[in-house]
Image (cartoon, rainbow, N blue to C red; front, side):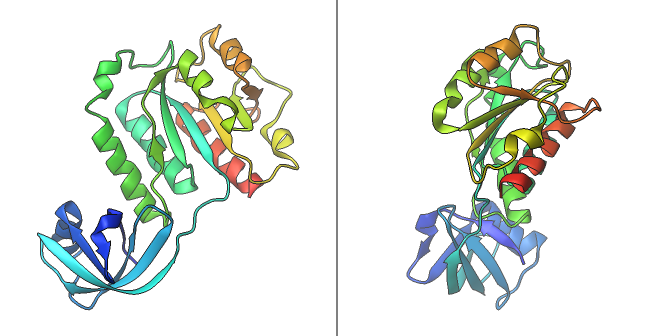
Length: 241
């Protein structure tokens, strides 16, 4: 069933109002009709089963027939993703959202392909759209938070004690496995720092460790950064939930 996030103020008096791009998608792309059912979400923890009473490319009105709590992973997972080429970074945003990540912090590391923070200003609208669509498609109850990009040194410091477990998958770590660190823990907030394609610079791992990040191995094989991101997210959520 189709799902749409809309502003909470557009849900009033038993009626949901869907406008803008969502209305165009409903009317012209999905070709939904009056009487069809769909789900709208307020991104505040509730979802609504609705029946479309009016459909047009400008605005759609839907009658609410049921309200229920939206389901979200019990584990709050923050992914700190080193910036890379557009397709790979957007793929990580999409797939980690589908898996269940609660938030993303773009990181400028020494070997990131993007070094100028000014280059990012026009990307956030697109990235937020990707997160929204991935959350709708995968049945999420909330859109992940997208934080402002930071250089690695500031990024690891910004996480702080809000995340009891802070991890940095690193190919040079041979002893401490992800599974061993997660064993016996349940529903704890986790932050994961994913390095760039060229790997971390020499001083970056010690910088993260000083900020409370624990290096872990994901196994014997060397994974691409986008693979490491999705594997880390999936394993953490599986083990802790």
